[in-house]
Length: 266
Image 1: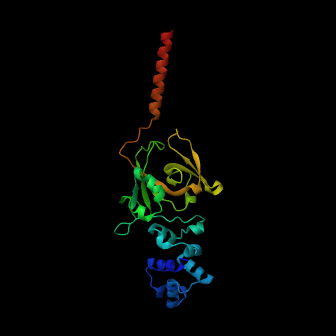
Image 2: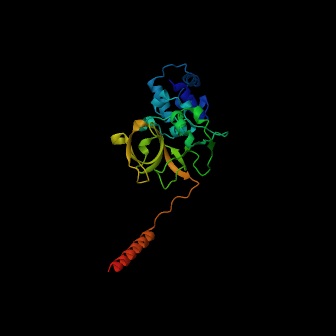
Image 3: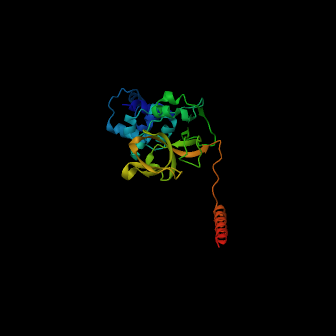
């Protein structure tokens, strides 16, 4: 049971002393200390409810989740009240890294690291070996990661582009049509438009921007991570789009050629 370590961690993150928290909960300091050091082996239901309301975190999370293994981003989400046990989705422990000032890094996953990422995405040691950087234009209270694409399924985003994604904790919040980077059991890292069919069918429909690729469904159990697309970096310019004026000129040119051919046949 992770309850003692969790309530101690939450108190320290609020920068409050045992005296202050004990007073607000209606305990003596010694009683709170006994809860935090594990001397009280089986806290009562009333005590669990009290701590749950005080920290705005579900009893399940306080008892079952080792919060010391969560990233700063996930801890902040819990403290905001976004407890995934309450929303009905599984809590996803994200391996992450921070810089010297405890700011979340953006880890980069190049094409050559894709196979390794598929195996080591949850291993802090593996994630710690990935190249990292900071990007000031992104929000500081979100978790981001960058992946290098391979292939042409998402043209006009070019092959070898780098896409930056924001970690999605609760997949039920994905809006249909949202571009996402997914880590799947079979394909590894894929970049697709996602249609959310989780509530009724426990599936996601994945679509490519390139019409040459057909949409397909994937069961939620085959997905390990989802990152919401934010932006991309490429050394290539996207292919120019055909404008309405271009189409009109092309049609007029064809009509003129057909007129000349008919005159020659006469």
